[in-house]
Image (tube, rainbow over all chains, first blue to last red; front, side, top):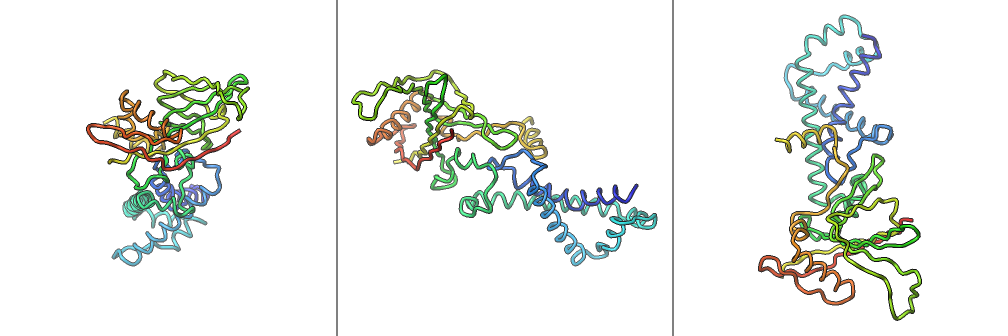
Length: 243
Length: 76
Protein backbone atom coordinates (compact mmCIF):
# COMPACT_ATOMS: atom_id res chain seq x y z
CA UNK A 1 0.00 0.00 0.00
CA UNK A 2 1.40 3.38 -0.90
CA UNK A 3 2.03 6.21 1.54
CA UNK A 4 -0.88 8.25 0.18
CA UNK A 5 -3.36 5.37 0.55
CA UNK A 6 -2.22 4.69 4.11
CA UNK A 7 -2.37 8.35 5.02
CA UNK A 8 -5.81 8.77 3.43
CA UNK A 9 -7.21 5.71 5.22
CA UNK A 10 -5.77 6.97 8.50
CA UNK A 11 -7.25 10.43 8.10
CA UNK A 12 -10.68 8.93 7.34
CA UNK A 13 -10.56 6.57 10.34
CA UNK A 14 -8.95 8.96 12.78
CA UNK A 15 -10.56 12.27 11.94
CA UNK A 16 -13.38 12.22 9.41
CA UNK A 17 -15.24 9.18 10.80
CA UNK A 18 -15.67 10.48 14.40
CA UNK A 19 -16.52 13.98 13.12
CA UNK A 20 -19.00 12.55 10.63
CA UNK A 21 -20.68 10.40 13.28
CA UNK A 22 -21.03 13.41 15.59
CA UNK A 23 -22.42 15.51 12.74
CA UNK A 24 -24.89 12.78 11.79
CA UNK A 25 -26.12 12.58 15.40
CA UNK A 26 -26.29 16.31 16.13
CA UNK A 27 -27.98 17.34 12.87
CA UNK A 28 -30.68 14.69 12.93
CA UNK A 29 -33.68 16.70 14.10
CA UNK A 30 -36.31 18.33 11.90
CA UNK A 31 -34.46 21.61 12.45
CA UNK A 32 -31.66 20.34 10.27
CA UNK A 33 -31.54 19.97 6.56
CA UNK A 34 -30.49 16.35 6.28
CA UNK A 35 -28.91 16.43 2.89
CA UNK A 36 -25.15 16.40 3.16
CA UNK A 37 -23.58 19.09 1.06
CA UNK A 38 -20.10 17.68 0.63
CA UNK A 39 -19.01 20.63 -1.50
CA UNK A 40 -19.73 23.04 1.31
CA UNK A 41 -16.35 24.01 2.75
CA UNK A 42 -17.71 24.93 6.18
CA UNK A 43 -19.26 21.48 6.61
CA UNK A 44 -15.96 19.77 5.82
CA UNK A 45 -14.14 22.08 8.24
CA UNK A 46 -16.81 21.37 10.88
CA UNK A 47 -16.51 17.59 10.42
CA UNK A 48 -12.70 17.59 10.46
CA UNK A 49 -12.56 20.06 13.39
CA UNK A 50 -14.94 17.96 15.50
CA UNK A 51 -13.03 14.81 14.51
CA UNK A 52 -9.70 16.30 15.66
CA UNK A 53 -11.32 17.46 18.92
CA UNK A 54 -12.75 14.03 19.76
CA UNK A 55 -9.58 12.26 18.65
CA UNK A 56 -7.58 14.49 21.02
CA UNK A 57 -9.98 13.63 23.85
CA UNK A 58 -9.70 9.93 23.00
CA UNK A 59 -5.90 10.06 22.97
CA UNK A 60 -5.82 11.86 26.33
CA UNK A 61 -8.21 9.25 27.70
CA UNK A 62 -6.07 6.33 26.50
CA UNK A 63 -2.71 7.85 27.47
CA UNK A 64 -3.73 8.90 30.99
CA UNK A 65 -6.52 6.59 32.09
CA UNK A 66 -6.06 3.26 30.33
CA UNK A 67 -3.28 1.11 31.82
CA UNK A 68 -0.76 -0.75 29.56
CA UNK A 69 -1.79 1.12 26.39
CA UNK A 70 -0.83 4.45 24.89
CA UNK A 71 -1.07 6.20 21.53
CA UNK A 72 2.30 6.26 19.83
CA UNK A 73 2.53 9.56 17.93
CA UNK A 74 5.82 8.57 16.32
CA UNK A 75 4.15 5.53 14.79
CA UNK A 76 1.23 7.63 13.47
CA UNK A 77 3.73 10.07 11.98
CA UNK A 78 5.57 7.24 10.27
CA UNK A 79 2.32 5.77 8.93
CA UNK A 80 1.32 9.11 7.47
CA UNK A 81 4.68 9.85 5.90
CA UNK A 82 6.74 6.77 5.12
CA UNK A 83 5.39 3.46 6.42
CA UNK A 84 7.93 0.60 6.31
CA UNK A 85 7.36 -3.09 7.05
CA UNK A 86 8.40 -2.74 10.70
CA UNK A 87 5.81 0.03 11.27
CA UNK A 88 3.04 -1.96 9.63
CA UNK A 89 4.01 -5.05 11.62
CA UNK A 90 3.95 -3.03 14.85
CA UNK A 91 0.42 -1.86 14.04
CA UNK A 92 -0.65 -5.39 13.06
CA UNK A 93 -0.20 -6.61 16.62
CA UNK A 94 -2.78 -4.13 17.92
CA UNK A 95 -5.53 -4.33 15.30
CA UNK A 96 -8.29 -5.46 17.77
CA UNK A 97 -7.37 -2.71 20.24
CA UNK A 98 -7.35 -0.05 17.48
CA UNK A 99 -10.69 -1.34 16.20
CA UNK A 100 -12.33 -1.21 19.65
CA UNK A 101 -10.85 2.23 20.29
CA UNK A 102 -12.37 3.52 17.02
CA UNK A 103 -15.76 1.94 17.75
CA UNK A 104 -15.74 3.36 21.31
CA UNK A 105 -14.80 6.80 19.98
CA UNK A 106 -17.58 6.72 17.38
CA UNK A 107 -20.14 5.76 20.04
CA UNK A 108 -18.85 8.60 22.20
CA UNK A 109 -19.22 11.05 19.29
CA UNK A 110 -22.72 9.77 18.56
CA UNK A 111 -23.85 10.04 22.18
CA UNK A 112 -22.36 13.53 22.53
CA UNK A 113 -23.98 14.69 19.29
CA UNK A 114 -27.43 13.40 20.24
CA UNK A 115 -27.10 14.63 23.81
CA UNK A 116 -26.05 18.10 22.71
CA UNK A 117 -28.89 18.28 20.17
CA UNK A 118 -31.38 17.24 22.87
CA UNK A 119 -30.11 19.90 25.31
CA UNK A 120 -30.09 22.63 22.65
CA UNK A 121 -33.66 21.84 21.51
CA UNK A 122 -35.23 21.22 24.92
CA UNK A 123 -33.61 24.29 26.48
CA UNK A 124 -34.39 26.29 23.30
CA UNK A 125 -30.79 27.47 23.14
CA UNK A 126 -30.94 27.59 19.33
CA UNK A 127 -33.60 30.30 19.57
CA UNK A 128 -31.49 32.36 21.96
CA UNK A 129 -27.98 31.85 20.54
CA UNK A 130 -27.62 32.35 16.75
CA UNK A 131 -24.45 30.24 16.65
CA UNK A 132 -26.42 27.17 17.76
CA UNK A 133 -29.14 27.59 15.13
CA UNK A 134 -29.76 24.57 12.93
CA UNK A 135 -29.56 25.04 9.19
CA UNK A 136 -33.19 24.38 8.29
CA UNK A 137 -34.45 27.94 8.67
CA UNK A 138 -37.85 26.99 7.27
CA UNK A 139 -38.59 24.81 10.27
CA UNK A 140 -38.27 27.81 12.59
CA UNK A 141 -40.84 29.66 10.47
CA UNK A 142 -43.21 26.80 9.69
CA UNK A 143 -43.20 24.93 12.99
CA UNK A 144 -43.95 28.11 14.93
CA UNK A 145 -41.90 26.72 17.82
CA UNK A 146 -40.24 30.08 18.59
CA UNK A 147 -43.77 31.40 19.32
CA UNK A 148 -44.72 28.57 21.69
CA UNK A 149 -44.74 29.46 25.37
CA UNK A 150 -43.53 26.00 26.34
CA UNK A 151 -41.52 23.63 24.18
CA UNK A 152 -44.24 20.96 24.26
CA UNK A 153 -47.07 23.37 23.31
CA UNK A 154 -48.65 22.75 19.96
CA UNK A 155 -48.81 25.73 17.62
CA UNK A 156 -51.50 26.00 14.94
CA UNK A 157 -50.30 27.62 11.75
CA UNK A 158 -52.95 29.32 9.64
CA UNK A 159 -51.49 30.60 6.39
CA UNK A 160 -52.56 32.89 3.59
CA UNK A 161 -50.66 32.25 0.39
CA UNK A 162 -51.02 34.52 -2.60
CA UNK A 163 -50.41 32.71 -5.87
CA UNK A 164 -50.37 34.11 -9.37
CA UNK A 165 -52.15 31.93 -11.93
CA UNK A 166 -52.51 33.20 -15.50
CA UNK A 167 -52.46 36.85 -14.53
CA UNK A 168 -54.98 36.24 -11.75
CA UNK A 169 -54.14 36.50 -8.08
CA UNK A 170 -55.55 33.77 -5.87
CA UNK A 171 -55.23 33.59 -2.09
CA UNK A 172 -55.29 30.16 -0.51
CA UNK A 173 -55.93 30.09 3.24
CA UNK A 174 -55.61 27.00 5.39
CA UNK A 175 -53.66 25.08 7.99
CA UNK A 176 -50.04 24.49 7.19
CA UNK A 177 -49.34 20.80 7.70
CA UNK A 178 -46.16 19.95 5.81
CA UNK A 179 -43.44 21.34 3.59
CA UNK A 180 -40.77 19.91 1.32
CA UNK A 181 -37.28 21.20 0.80
CA UNK A 182 -34.93 20.41 -2.05
CA UNK A 183 -31.33 19.22 -2.15
CA UNK A 184 -30.09 22.79 -1.89
CA UNK A 185 -32.11 23.42 1.29
CA UNK A 186 -34.60 25.67 -0.49
CA UNK A 187 -38.33 25.37 -0.04
CA UNK A 188 -40.08 23.49 -2.84
CA UNK A 189 -43.66 22.78 -1.81
CA UNK A 190 -45.99 23.71 1.04
CA UNK A 191 -48.96 21.57 2.01
CA UNK A 192 -52.23 22.98 3.33
CA UNK A 193 -55.37 21.42 4.77
CA UNK A 194 -58.91 22.81 5.20
CA UNK A 195 -58.30 25.23 2.38
CA UNK A 196 -60.33 28.26 1.33
CA UNK A 197 -59.70 29.87 -2.00
CA UNK A 198 -60.22 33.53 -2.71
CA UNK A 199 -59.87 35.13 -6.13
CA UNK A 200 -58.69 38.69 -5.86
CA UNK A 201 -60.74 41.27 -7.70
CA UNK A 202 -58.17 43.50 -9.38
CA UNK A 203 -60.67 46.30 -9.91
CA UNK A 204 -61.05 46.67 -6.15
CA UNK A 205 -59.99 50.03 -4.75
CA UNK A 206 -59.32 50.43 -1.02
CA UNK A 207 -61.98 53.18 -0.82
CA UNK A 208 -64.71 51.02 -2.38
CA UNK A 209 -67.53 50.17 -0.04
CA UNK A 210 -68.22 46.87 -1.68
CA UNK A 211 -65.57 44.17 -1.91
CA UNK A 212 -66.11 41.63 -4.65
CA UNK A 213 -63.48 39.07 -3.77
CA UNK A 214 -65.03 35.66 -4.28
CA UNK A 215 -64.24 33.19 -1.53
CA UNK A 216 -65.18 29.54 -1.38
CA UNK A 217 -64.08 26.35 0.32
CA UNK A 218 -61.66 24.31 -1.69
CA UNK A 219 -62.70 20.69 -1.23
CA UNK A 220 -59.44 18.76 -1.31
CA UNK A 221 -57.83 16.74 1.45
CA UNK A 222 -54.45 18.32 0.78
CA UNK A 223 -53.37 21.23 -1.34
CA UNK A 224 -49.77 21.34 -2.49
CA UNK A 225 -48.45 24.71 -3.60
CA UNK A 226 -45.08 25.00 -5.37
CA UNK A 227 -42.87 27.65 -3.81
CA UNK A 228 -42.04 29.12 -7.22
CA UNK A 229 -45.64 30.25 -7.66
CA UNK A 230 -45.94 31.92 -4.27
CA UNK A 231 -46.04 35.70 -4.39
CA UNK A 232 -46.71 36.39 -0.75
CA UNK A 233 -47.01 34.26 2.35
CA UNK A 234 -48.29 35.15 5.78
CA UNK A 235 -48.57 32.83 8.76
CA UNK A 236 -50.59 33.45 11.90
CA UNK A 237 -49.65 31.31 14.88
CA UNK A 238 -52.35 30.22 17.31
CA UNK A 239 -52.51 28.28 20.53
CA UNK A 240 -55.50 26.63 22.22
CA UNK A 241 -55.50 27.40 25.93
CA UNK A 242 -57.66 25.28 28.20
CA UNK A 243 -60.15 27.32 30.22
CA UNK B 1 -40.05 -3.47 12.59
CA UNK B 2 -40.40 -1.26 9.50
CA UNK B 3 -40.28 1.79 11.75
CA UNK B 4 -37.03 0.57 13.35
CA UNK B 5 -35.43 -0.03 9.94
CA UNK B 6 -36.66 3.39 8.79
CA UNK B 7 -35.14 5.05 11.86
CA UNK B 8 -31.80 3.29 11.40
CA UNK B 9 -31.73 4.17 7.69
CA UNK B 10 -32.66 7.74 8.57
CA UNK B 11 -29.81 7.94 11.04
CA UNK B 12 -27.24 6.47 8.68
CA UNK B 13 -28.19 7.98 5.37
CA UNK B 14 -30.33 10.97 6.30
CA UNK B 15 -33.97 11.50 5.55
CA UNK B 16 -35.39 9.39 2.76
CA UNK B 17 -38.25 11.86 2.47
CA UNK B 18 -38.12 15.54 1.78
CA UNK B 19 -41.22 16.36 3.82
CA UNK B 20 -41.21 17.92 7.26
CA UNK B 21 -44.62 17.56 8.92
CA UNK B 22 -45.32 20.56 11.13
CA UNK B 23 -48.47 19.51 12.91
CA UNK B 24 -48.79 17.49 16.07
CA UNK B 25 -51.20 14.98 17.52
CA UNK B 26 -53.87 17.47 18.62
CA UNK B 27 -53.86 19.31 15.27
CA UNK B 28 -54.22 15.95 13.53
CA UNK B 29 -57.26 15.14 15.67
CA UNK B 30 -58.87 18.53 15.12
CA UNK B 31 -58.29 18.61 11.38
CA UNK B 32 -59.64 15.10 10.93
CA UNK B 33 -62.82 15.94 12.85
CA UNK B 34 -65.28 17.95 10.78
CA UNK B 35 -67.00 19.59 13.76
CA UNK B 36 -63.77 20.56 15.56
CA UNK B 37 -62.13 21.94 12.44
CA UNK B 38 -65.28 24.01 11.72
CA UNK B 39 -65.13 25.42 15.25
CA UNK B 40 -61.44 26.25 14.90
CA UNK B 41 -61.87 27.84 11.46
CA UNK B 42 -64.77 29.91 12.72
CA UNK B 43 -62.75 31.09 15.73
CA UNK B 44 -59.82 32.02 13.44
CA UNK B 45 -62.20 33.87 11.13
CA UNK B 46 -63.56 35.86 14.08
CA UNK B 47 -60.03 36.68 15.22
CA UNK B 48 -59.05 37.84 11.72
CA UNK B 49 -62.02 40.21 11.69
CA UNK B 50 -61.03 41.69 15.05
CA UNK B 51 -63.83 39.99 16.98
CA UNK B 52 -63.53 37.89 20.12
CA UNK B 53 -63.27 34.25 19.00
CA UNK B 54 -65.72 31.82 20.62
CA UNK B 55 -64.45 29.02 22.84
CA UNK B 56 -63.81 25.64 21.25
CA UNK B 57 -65.29 22.51 22.81
CA UNK B 58 -63.10 19.41 22.64
CA UNK B 59 -64.40 16.42 24.63
CA UNK B 60 -66.24 18.43 27.30
CA UNK B 61 -63.27 20.75 27.74
CA UNK B 62 -63.30 24.37 26.65
CA UNK B 63 -60.40 25.98 24.88
CA UNK B 64 -59.66 29.60 24.10
CA UNK B 65 -57.95 30.57 20.84
CA UNK B 66 -54.87 32.70 21.50
CA UNK B 67 -52.98 34.47 18.75
CA UNK B 68 -49.25 34.03 19.37
CA UNK B 69 -47.79 36.00 16.51
CA UNK B 70 -47.60 36.56 12.81
CA UNK B 71 -44.96 36.21 10.10
CA UNK B 72 -45.23 37.78 6.70
CA UNK B 73 -42.91 37.48 3.75
CA UNK B 74 -43.03 38.94 0.29
CA UNK B 75 -41.35 36.41 -1.90
CA UNK B 76 -41.62 37.70 -5.46
